[in-house]
Image (cartoon, rainbow, N blue to C red; front, side, top):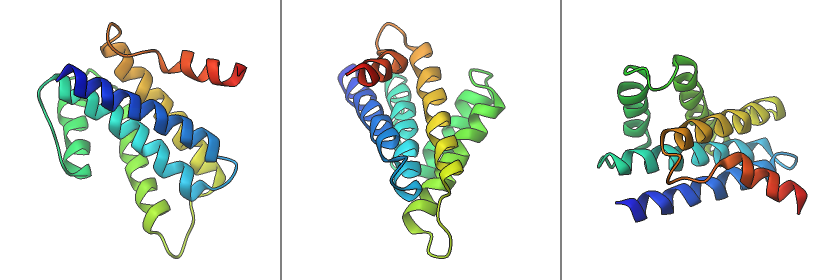
Length: 139
């Protein structure tokens, strides 16, 4: 369980890095990567609580049921997660409209907030996402 959670956390960090790197190239690519950063981070948390979900909608429902309604997360953070899921769909499957640069920038910022919230729930296990981002900016 712990090993699976750590693997998911590393995927979250990798996806956040990818979202940041593709931000200048394509909102349609960056926003879904930001979503996957949040998805993997939340999945890591739920794995530690022995919950595992297959569908994206089930994870989103669990975020609102188990994190927002229990006041572990603010309603704003729950809305940010839901918005990331909508942007994932728009970026991957949207035909008539693209994810704008502003939407993608917001997606990356929201993903960072979500990773930070998950990390603060498990500080002894998950590395601080901000320190990773700082290390990459200095490299």
